[in-house]
Amino acid sequence: MNALSKPQAGFDPYAAREQFPILKRDVNGKPLIYLDSAASAQKPEAVIEAVADVWRGSYANVHRGLHTLANEATAAFENARATIGRFIGAERSEEIVLTKGATDAINLVASSIGQTLEEGDEVILSQMEHHSNIVPWHFLRERKGVVIKWAPVTEDGRIDLEAYEALFSVRTRFVSLVHMSNVLGTLNPATRLAEIAHAHGVPIMFDGTQSAVHSHIDVAELGCDFFAFTGHKLYGPNGVGVLYAAGDWLNRLAPYQGGGEMIAEVSEDGVVYADAPHKFEAGTPAIAEVIGLGAAIEWLTAQDRVAIHAHELSLLDRMMAGLDEFDDVRVLGTAQEKGGIVSFVMENAHAHDLAQLMDKYGVAVRAGHHCAHPLMKRYGVTATVRASIALYNTAEDVDAFLEALKKARSFLI
Ligand SMILES: *Cc1c(COP(=O)(O)O)cnc(C)c1O
Image 1 (spheres, rainbow, N blue to C red):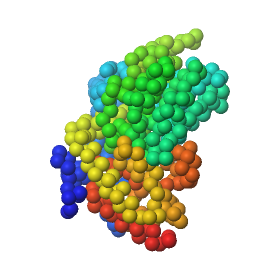
Image 2: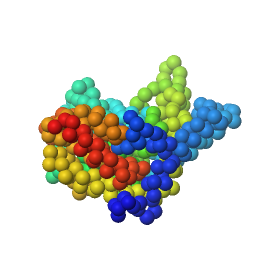
Image 3: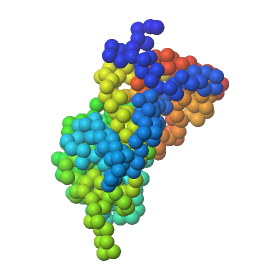
Image 4: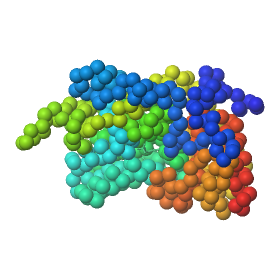
């Protein structure tokens, strides 16, 4: 092992890997090199066991139960909500709505805020949003005549702050921005972005789906009104996500979906809603998955996250330096404030072909538009290859990736 491949003090990726059973398998006769965690991360034993334990030992529907299993499941479910709230620095558990994912959380906000908007009202997004944070706002454009304004992205992959500030007008009603780009890896200056929005009297939401994984989140420090993220990219189960809403936002917003669990009383003449956050949680939730997300967060926060961050950045540097050796590779996203997500294109080779060939060597990377069509258009490309780094990746993974890319290239060019 050379110097770079030595684990950082405080975090040993080789030991961490042992806790992820899937990483032991082969793919196409080669050891699996998993570099697709920005699409979905693999799960440690602690999460697999937590989910299985619910189903094996204390499963029942939550809330309003009068029997022991229902009470156990409810306690574990609400305990997970409290863990999730602490993880992002929420003041109270009541600020945490459990959703199906980040997409569901953003749709909730767009739909509920949307009910207060009128034709000609404006919302600000950026060119680097995931479709999850674009399409729900297009609904409001189509249905209510809401105007979407786009904060431009600089060549190195940052939100242009001056241009962003210039978008505000007397009609601006809401800002929704990605905290960390799932394509560029850029970590946006959230505190500053929120200050600017608030200086104009406009509330702001961050899509924290990637930043919750790769950085320390304190919603008070970010100063945001809403923060959305998803369980399955945070080493937790899929089918569960989180919406944080500061202070009494949830009391001020109309509910998103109707059904059981979100009501206090229903009659033939009307409905009295349950208190927040339950008002926003219609229907039976993803019980074991929510508890599994609580377990994922407990597992993650028991690690040295500062050392994990340093480990991921050292792999990022190694990957960027390796890609720099290819004169036909162009990396999209070279900002200073960047985490372990690397998107690139290669001259004369299609991203899909590269990804498929690399899979022959056991290397799992993603190719495509990464649910970010406006960003692809911004850079004049239709697809990129994306390699994304997680805590369980190693310097050997990065080297295998570079080697596979070289071999794939030799087939194509
Ligand atoms: C993955 C992703 C989403 C969507 O998350 P889901 O879990 O699919 O709802 C939204 N925003 C970003 C930045 C993402 O990476």
